[in-house]
Image 1: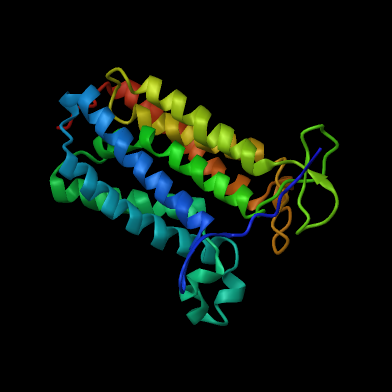
Image 2: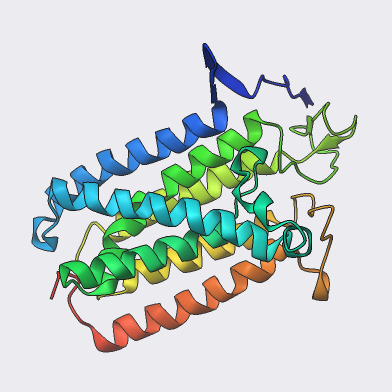
Length: 265
């Protein structure tokens, strides 16, 4: 049994500027993305990505993450609340981001980048997919530090008590997601993409891997109080993950059926 230390959400106070742990985790994710991107570009020079390409992709990706993550949270989780007070959508300091919304935002940003640079869309998504999981893992560490998105009650020996919630031992579901969506998915994608694969295959594995890991972890994560458990006993996170899994299977089958090279066209 472990009692959460109830960290101060502010990591660094610089005069009137408060640097929060969650913001630092985003920064860690972006830095990891750039470093891994440079390694991947050196390992797979035939893919044709330069340091400038990485900077451009990160710039547009950040915009997609922030806008998509916020709008996804509003639409998927608290639409009825924000529709009565639309200005609160801009109150990002109150928190509220959705992975699935951020994912859709990145997809749209990468589609625009691919068109702008005349690359195949799947060439871009295949390149960036292995670079994403460690950033996702950093975000889950931020959730744990902030004692948010906690797990369901359990009597397992590694359970954590979150004093800001109650005195019940709970699953540290944030750490499960760190281990699965972050570390495990990174290793799978990095190894899978280290050799040439059909165009779209790496993206398909990402969709299947993230969707499956998130779907499983949701069984240990406390459902959102304002939504609860939805149809068929699934949470919102599970319902949003199912299309990712199905889409990944279709994409993987399409990739191997067509067998196009993963180098840019």
